[in-house]
Amino acid sequence: MTRSVGTAALLVATLFALGCDKKDDSGSSAGGPSAPKDSATEALQAANAESGGRLFDKSLTKKACELLSPERVGETFGIPAAELRPIGAVGCTYQWESKGAGEPTRLDVRFSTIQVHADVATAKQWFANATKGMSQGEVKDAMAAVTRAAKEREEVDTKAKEKTVDLVGGAVTDAAGPGGFQFESVDGVGDEARLALSDGALWVRAGNLTFVISAYHGPPAPKPDLKGVGLQEMAKAALAADREWVKKTLSKRREDASKLVAVLLKALP
Image (cartoon, rainbow, N blue to C red):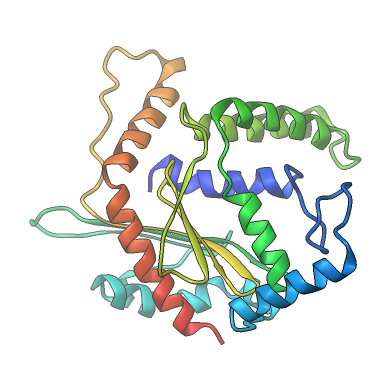
């Protein structure tokens, strides 16, 4: 899995989780004016009606690899389940490479950022915020503010922790790239779905559930040409090569992720 595909979705989620346009449980902006009670009630009723009132239990957030099992992933992409080993540290991840003399093929899957919101209206608001898109400059400014706020927290009480906060902030900005974080809508997937153009991850809402799925099944990425590139520039060159590969395979990533979402939604209790 390329670095951009493996990290960008998680880093974007971190950005919003730390407070960029963060919403409280009522669906209104944190610190901002609340909508009139009758309007909020009407919005909630409309949102629930639109999704058929699909309300999922919070226990789903701890069942990533159970829901996206090796059997389901293998059946989707024609790979023996016995050859798939889920990694469940954060969400559920699969990495697989073909063996043999034929054309090399790899599979990269990541199911992450799984959240069960208080109600459908809150999920809709969170989803709108998380996939609204940001330019590179907006990402940089937002991360500067988030980094400052994070360092003011009591638990960030050592230089090492402050350095970690800086590294996360820098990683988000680097992952954004020149185009920032941009999304396009994908029809027919869940109640709402948007594709992140920076890494090919598919952000999905189904009722009060939101999650992110990345999937790619095809030829491996070519190794980047790093000849003549200094050590300090290698990471940037590798990341640029990742972005170019994602761009070339974006339609395949949309297709593969959409297939997995269909399988996953059928498996939801």
